Amino acid sequence: MLEEKNTSYMEKSVEWEEESKKTSALKSQIEVYKRQVRYSRLQLYSINQICLFDSLSLVVVEVQFARLLAFQRICIYRMSLTYTVRGMLYHFCAAVKYGSAMIKINHSGFP
Image 1: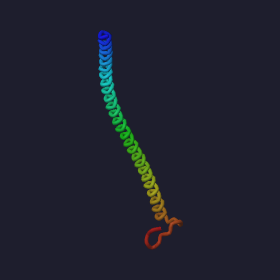
Image 2 (image 1 turned 30 degrees about the vertical axis):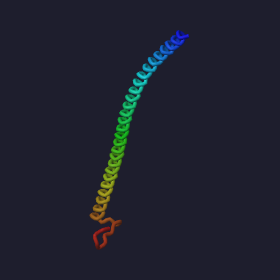
Image 3 (image 1 turned 180 degrees about the vertical axis):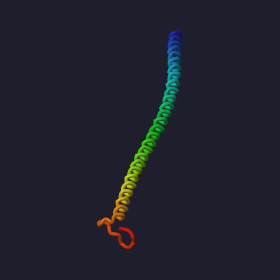
Image 4 (image 1 turned 45 degrees about the horizontal axis):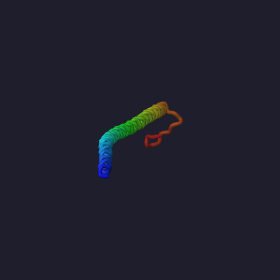
């Protein structure tokens, strides 16, 4: 009977040692997994920061392009007004010079 108990304890002891080895192996695998997860999260964070910077850069470029287009439209409109005013001045001066019946000058000197 003592030998049976001894054998039973030995078997349990062997099982516990095997379980302990398995647990140790699992712990080391879990630690490796945790390190990989941390590294992946850091990489993801870095990539997100780069993407955020890129998207902000894209917004800045779009705003600059919109401002450039608006400036271009203003320049074209200004040029158009300049030509219109010059044409009106030319026609007014010609009409005054040649005494056009369409333009009557009042006392202030303006039509």
